[in-house]
Structures are given as C-alpha cells and as structure tokens.
Image 1 (cartoon, rainbow, N blue to C red):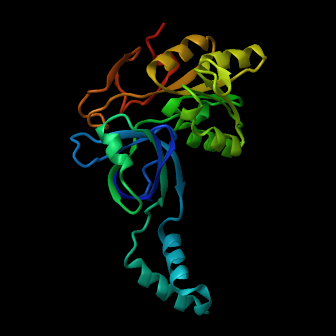
Image 2: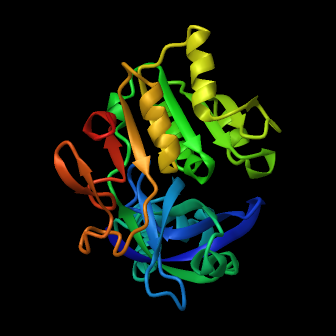
Image 3: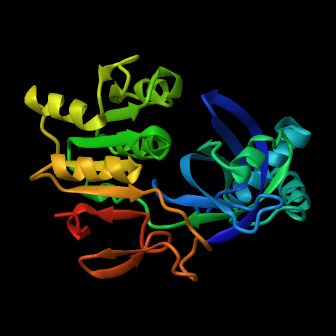
Length: 294
C-alpha cells in the first residue's frame, strides 16, 4: 500500500452514470490486475474503494530525469557526455529516483454522495489516494484459454487483466453483462486489443438477451473450452457463474463495502473454507475452490 497524490487528467461520463477517470502520478504500488485504490473524497468519513481498470507506466528513475532534461533543453545542445551529465544532475535535484510515474484509469458508477462528488472533480485537481490495495488475479494459472467475465461496473478490471494476458501470448475470451446497451462499457477497448468479446444484456438491446451465464452456456454448447475463468461483478452474478462452471476452476473478485480498505477494521470479512478472510486484504480475488457456495 502506498499513499500518493494523483492529478486528474480526465474525468468524463462514458455510459449512464458511469465515469472514466484518468489520473497521473506515482503508480508504482499498482502491480497486479484486480487490485483497487482507495480515494479520499472531500466531506466523506471513509475513502471510496474503486477497482483499477488500467495502468500505464511512463519512465522511472534516471531515465525519467534524462527525459525531462531532453525535453527542457534538447539533446543537440550536449555534444559531450560530460555536458549531458551536468544537465542530468541539475534536473535530478528536483526528481526522486525509482519513482514509477504514469497513469491509472478507473471506472466508477455514481450511486451515492461520495461517487457523485468524485464525478464533479475536474482536470488538474489533485486527489489523495491509497494505491496498490488488495490481492489481484493470478495470471500464472490462466492456462491457454482463459475466460474473462465482467458484470456491469465489475467489467473494469478486465481491461488490465486482458492486456497482461495478451502480452504473455494468451488470447482471452471475454463475456460482459449489462442491463441494457446504455450501460455498456469497455467492449470496444477489449476488442481493439485482440480479445474475442461477447455481450449479454438483460433487455436484449445488445448482444444476447439474458445474463453472462446464458452467454457462457451458449459458448460451451458450441464446443468452446476454457482453462480457467476470471470474474468480477455483483454477488448474484458471481454465484451464478460459480454454479454454472462445474469442472472449471476460477478466480472471483468481490465487490464489497469496506471500511479502512487495508485490513485493519475487519469490516469486510467473509467466511471461506480456510476460515474468515478480509475482502480488502486477503482478496478481493478468491479462488473458486475457497468459497462456501456448494
């Protein structure tokens, strides 16, 4: 966990009451898809936990300093290593070594006072954020045919997960579920990076009419086989996916109300086969085999 100040680069509505915010700063603590951040919102007692959708790191340490020097002065002015070194040292006086700078993207739905206040924040404003929280998805267990399942705003962590899988040479199948076409998010982003994307909507306004489990069942009936599934969404969806994936191991990320967000208050505890676990600290991702839903 790391407490940082992140500056808003953009904050815009992308679907009905769903916003996409991009922030820049020190994102070094965010290392695994499925982790979340905890944002301090003015006027609120508790921070707001929000899943990480994507992270893009820029440059680190000396390379960042050299980049700043080049942008400020231009490399053509420095014809000798000694002159270049002097500029780098001068710039280094205002820079920290080993700070990973970049951007973090989150998606959030405005459902209460905290998220509505967050939607009102604009470009250039600075937020106090706890980063790198929780244990995310373990892509080492993905196999060669992973299935990614996102329900509503729970689709958010699937983008970073899919990117890492594709970077490892694995092409995932993605199933997304929404109430209607007006709620749809990320289907275009996931398609553009090379995923096979299937959508189900409850009202049939886009894709298959029904739920993610209906779409998964249809794919399996067509002969598609999966090595492991990764799911995030509301509890009813997770339970339905759990029941409908007999014989298939998976990892499920829970959306849970939290107090502290880092394991101190025990407010988000749940029972597992291995005893009580904290969603914020031990999760939010749990293996299917750990859950007491049989």
